[in-house]
Amino acid sequence: MARNSITAGVALFCIKPRPSILLVLDKGEKIPQRNGRDFSKPEVWKLPSGGFKTSDADSKVTAIRELMEETGVCICESFLNDRLCVDHEKVSWRPGSDIHHDITYLVIMYDRPKLGTSVDPKIEKARFFPLDQVPIPGSMLSETYVPVSHVRTINELIEKASDKLTALGVDPFSLYLPEEARD
Image 1 (tube, rainbow, N blue to C red):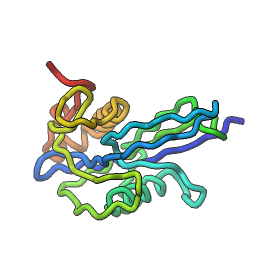
Image 2: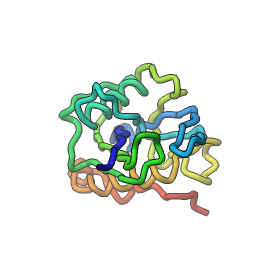
Image 3: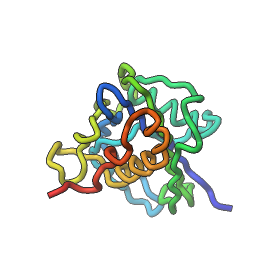
């Protein structure tokens, strides 16, 4: 039987004052691997997310807890919709895990919530980025950037929410992020 590990998080998208997404600046860390080596995770802007704990009832509870720990934003479980979620499953290199699930829920809010203080020591800061200012690889908008995997996740979630966004008066096609800087 395969042993699973789970990371869960929230892509918090706000419509006003202009379409933006909440990202956190992760300081990076060394992550132990099954082969005994460490993977050095670089400093990046990322979606708020973190590992499942045995005290979490499910991935939704993990996502809500991680959003609160990393940004100070508290949301209700009713904000999370299984239809506006992606689950990327891959082979795990983590000790004690064969398969890893990276689960991200999309939450759309009309107005931006107020950010609180991060209690996660790996998080340097949290910030709402207008979608046209998200630091993607090669964009030169920032020394740190959003990993391509997170850009793809954001685009997948925008696609899944296209009907909802259209109903809110937002053109979903104008929100997609390029995977690398445009010339």
